[in-house]
Amino acid sequence: EPGLYIVATPIGNLGDITQRAADALARCDVIACEDTRVTGRLLHHMGLHKRMIRYDDHADDVSRDRLLGLMATQAVALVSDAGTPLVSDPGYRLVRAAHQQGIALTALPGPSAAIMALTLSGLPTDRFLFAGFMPVKDKARSDIMTELAGLRATLIFYETAPRLVSSLLALAGAWPARDVAVARELTKKFEECRVGTAQALAEHYTAHPPRGEIVLLVGPPAAPSTADLDIDAMLREQLLDKKAS
Ligand code: SAM
Image (tube, rainbow, N blue to C red; front, side, top):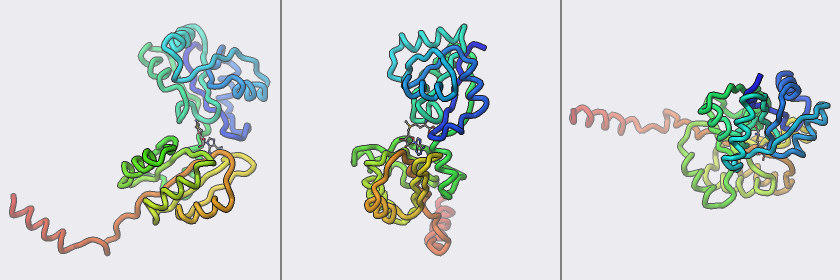
């Protein structure tokens, strides 16, 4: 069937390709991908030969329109280098345009490092915010921490190995008491998930410099316990409210 197929691919372990993803890649006419070498390796592993077209969100409107034009008559699969397309990866503009142009589209769900890390971390899962890549610059990093400080949710960031320790030290300064988790090399041979304070994790990763791919998670701020509440002040406020009304 012609249209757009958003296909999730493994984040490290090729065994994680789903049956539906494998079928979609086998059946599609064209694969739009970030990097033809990376996707070429996956296809080779699957014994597939397909036409590949490089696509990212920086692509100009002309090449996006060409790809959208193909979807009228051909099945176009969108994949990224790893995991779920559009999650810190290209595709959002393409999908939005497909909606606007009435193109048939569906997604074939599968692995995503953010969700795997969340489920593995032991941090609360009832509310979470995926914040994309942790900013590189100190100022941008402290700005986002200020912005998210009061949010009662587990925060999920993508991070790189060389920057992990400096991000942990920044977290230790801002939120010394919160639980933090580092999920590394998920689904791969050296997979690990460590939980602790940011300070303890900074010390660990200073002593053992990390390699590979990393998701950094921060638990929500502790709910204020009833012992911390100032009951007298609350009663006074209620009385004042009554007087005012
Ligand atoms: N679309 C992908 C997904 O659904 O997970 C994410 C793409 S983003 C460009 C790449 C980042 O995801 C890495 O820098 C790392 O933070 C995280 N990541 C991807 N694979 C991972 C893995 N196997 N273990 C830990 N983190 C991973």
